[in-house]
View (cartoon, rainbow, N blue to C red):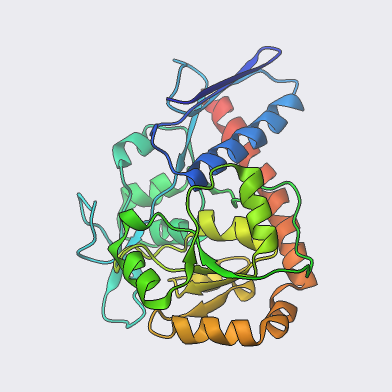
Length: 303
């Protein structure tokens, strides 16, 4: 169990990872959200106890991060109580389920941090009123874990993925069929940042044939450090604030698209890394601060 405790005057902020085996991208996101809360409490004269993750308080504001996919096709794993949503799959033949792992736990919280706008839309548009009400306590916090964006066109090279291959047969098949370098075992945020800053192209594909929420926890940190991201198509991608700075592809066309990006790298960079992207990332950081504040102070009033 990993625990942090910070005190500001009469306010106490604790953070306890609910899962001690949390992956590196989720760990970095916890740390980022923890630091956002720190900034809110540092600049407030009011007192409130906040817990991020497993609570150590009877009172106060209880928050946690929901790091899973809600956009899951029928037949996907870890779906205990299937709830049909209204988001169509790419072929238009069915709608995605609304999967909320450990739903009873998240319902018990005062507020929930979501890494994905499509996840929230999938919940808000379903016909299950309990889920719609739950979605009202969720706020999108874009995983901009690095303080500084590094979008400049420096000397970069190499195509890579950043997967734990042992946990996904689908990704292992892709890796063996393409020969793209997979990098694993890099757990320090600073080392990851340097990796991103020196690499040219990152490829992202879904873990399974069923779990299709866009993997923002993996992608956005890389994009913010200037990596061209080629990603498998995802539902509701038009709702992702920086969608037009991602190269989208079907899995079937992925290898060909990656080769095209390699051949025309500078042309792609010019289209993707624009002033609009810089403005979008700045706006997301501002929104993150606002959304974290809402989770704290709206719930502080009700406690």
